[in-house]
Image (cartoon, rainbow, N blue to C red; front, side, top):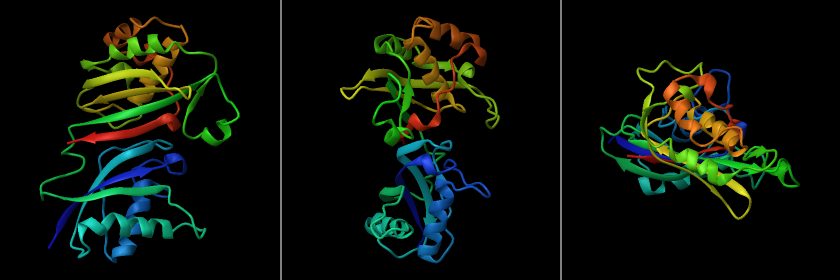
Amino acid sequence: MTKNILLTISYDGSGFHGWQKQPGQKTVQGYLEETFSRLFNREILLSGTSRTDAGVHAFAQRASFKTDISIPVERLAMVMNNALCGREKTSFGLSPVRIVDAVEMPDDFHARFSCKGKEYIYKIKAGGPDADSVFNRNYLYYVKGSLDVDKMDEAAKKLVGRKDFKSFEASGGNPRETTVREIFEAGVTGKEDGIIEFHVSGDGFLYNMVRIMTGTLVEIGRGKYEPEYIETITEACDRRLAGHTAPPFGLYLAKVFY
């Protein structure tokens, strides 16, 4: 009997060329499909929710696939994680990818097309590199100088709503029918450990949209623009007005909504 399985997946994206399978590149999707096809002795093809870029991480990527394997669904995550760890070269090696959960879904469910929205988190450390940066360089965006978190938060909240976000789309992505998206929530907070987090959720995101939003907020935090300028950027529908594209390694796919 064929089952439709939904996986929740966390991964360290620093060693991968993004989620989506590409010829000659190590990708998360390709890595998982290769591991699971070998494990179950049949072709496993995953449909992922988000095509995260090279270097981007995930707390909760989602992917679905259909299979007739007899292993109980409640044991799948354990079996898959054992296979992933088995690919590591050291005896106690942990995989950079982990299956957080596996559940059976209705036959018409699809991880990508059934998605109603996503939440991303971008992590920043102001002040530039420090003693710990050698260990965190793939997981935080180190920004020189100080940032005004309150102004960044004020600007982020102006992104909320259904708007044309063409100004925050990088060239080179797949052509879109529309650049209108709805942002449900957006905000910037400073943590006790000195890390600044930009949280944003919406019904969909354009190519590099969160990274361009982050770069713009960083420039507002530096004092280059006032928070109100975010509205000018959005209304202009002109990428040249927005800030720089923040690097991929501070970005995390945090949640997928169904």
